[in-house]
Image 1 (cartoon, one colour):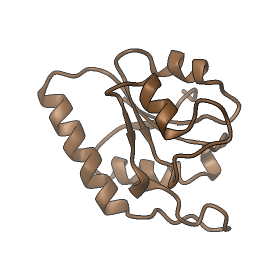
Image 2: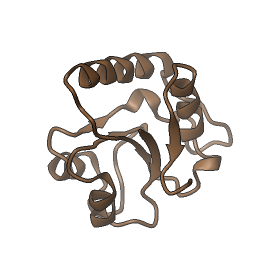
Image 3: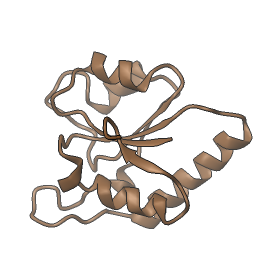
Length: 130
């Protein structure tokens, strides 16, 4: 399953519990920096060794603006589809978590990223929603 998740209001321990031992965390922030302890790229690489990827291509390049604009949607899609194909061929059975900071996924660029994946036949849902 592919889940969308925002880390606002969560601790790094919350995120570790949610993602678990076998899932992959893809950081879809344009810039993988955070004022919250544990949520910068270097910290996430330590917490999720070999299971963390910063995919800036799927970041919202107009984060501080009113509109949402995925930086390089097609390049990000190619990277993720290639990764999923490789993982599936190796028998991987974990989940994929696409993470950014936004608490409300309905107002976030995660929705556009989800649509890219759905257009290619993947089931994508916001973590915590049934």
